[in-house]
Image (cartoon, rainbow, N blue to C red; front, side, top):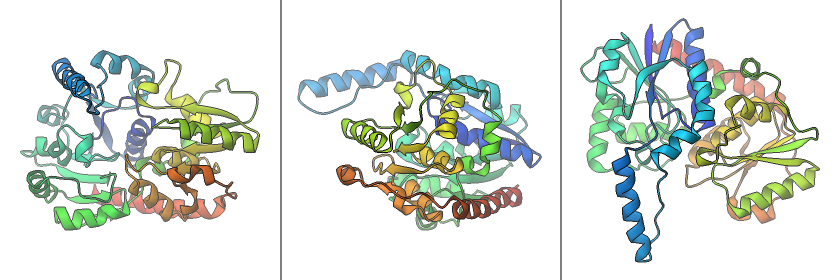
Length: 361
């Protein structure tokens, strides 16, 4: 079956790219032919200019506001990670701001899957209705949500968008969500039943990810790997303190504008594979710590959505790995993880999640 996948732009986010890669690989193993709508993260020049002019005047009157990166800067800094996309992910082209109905016809798509990384969070999507497949309303295709994520346990939709997305969600053939709290959000606000499943990245094993990795030059000494989405002096100090406690060299990698020309998906995965400990504030940083059985802790990232963290950690009985940002100064070293127990639980949930895809298609 030819399947189109709708997800966040495959731009400068390691986890966002790898969740799509993993979903495509899983669908291929099930005998399907998946393609992903290639969406752009950059806003048009006129919108960028309009936004930044407003920010300038807000600053002039003492208000807080954040300048937006230029489309040129976004395009330049996404090059390192887009190499992986070009090599390993089958794309629906041309690249667009939103998915196109024309592409459904052009590629002969028989099913559409929405998922996973915060695809149903309004603040992270230009056209939230298209993440509920509004663009394909006139097509007779299977509509599936796999591990669709709201990122938070709070309903963030305004009344008009709630009604629109509720009607669209009720046309789906099967819905699964990434966070446990999202089951209730779907029932209470969309009027649909949803199944709690694993993030796509967890559908593959570390052996499958290792097939992507060629030998890369690594530090001679043992190191702590820190994957940080929102860098701050407090987090950096904490990372260095934990590294010193363990006698490790700290290596810190960021996302978005912090992606460097020498970075790559493969190098990022290698850091997880070969490190001695992980500190992260990222959901997917936690995921790959688990996949590679690395002792770790995750700094609670409330702004980006804490429910996705707690849902994953509770599922695998790893709640003690979550550290409150406000209590970093009181942090005490954690014991080793019982990986035999975690892996047994993960394998069970992995099988259940793959069966959801099998039965839905």
